[in-house]
Amino acid sequence: MLQLRADLERQLLRKGLGALSRDRDCCADCGRTPLAGEWVHHYAEDFVCTLCRPLRGSEPKRSELVRHCEHGHTVRRLTPAAAAA
Image (cartoon, rainbow, N blue to C red; front, side):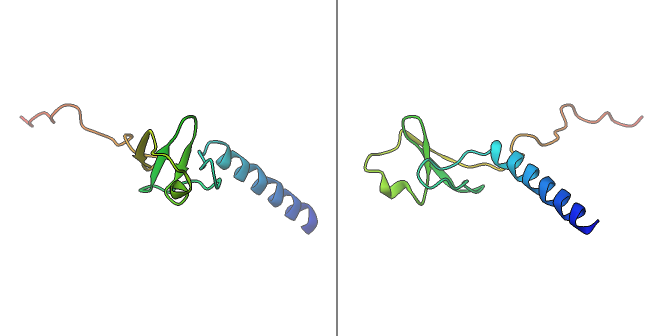
């Protein structure tokens, strides 16, 4: 019984990790996922993290800051609240 439970936990863990890594962008050189607040540097078809940038001889086409996954998804009040009468 304990073995079946351990196997199930292991399968669920693998499935969850696979789903997380599938949607992430990775550095073209080292494969690391850049953290929020870190700069990434875009070259032709790929990008590299700040740690790998010195390995490239040329200047990047552009650089951008990695934003938190919830950036732009905050709740905002669109109209002012009505005054109580």
